[in-house]
Length: 171
Image (cartoon, rainbow, N blue to C red):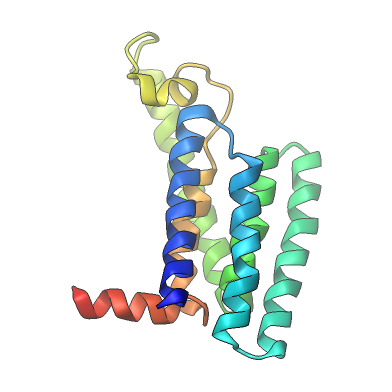
């Protein structure tokens, strides 16, 4: 039961990160911090073994180093650079490739859609929720793509599969 609560928190925080990124084009540090922090008690309670938890930590650390490098190269914002490793902690090595592919594909589709919307929707018409994304023309809310990748890769994670199977039983 407690593992389901942690897994639900993971999904809720990913969804919230996507929504807040659309609204403000930022992902707060506290959100990324909670995602990373909640991995620790989840790994302890799930007890997948030290080897599995270690691989998850290694994947998260590698993702952090690469993401920080891409942030400094100007590819995306600091919130995205912290959101990716926090998600990678949860999906681990088994979910790394599906996460990266799904995130890249969702990011490409998202970018195309936003560029089209920015061209078609006149300034001042955008509703309050998407003003930063559609009117400021500062960047792309890549947190949406990262969250999509997280949802796609979740079934590969040993920390999230039990929760997903419980959800499947109720549907």
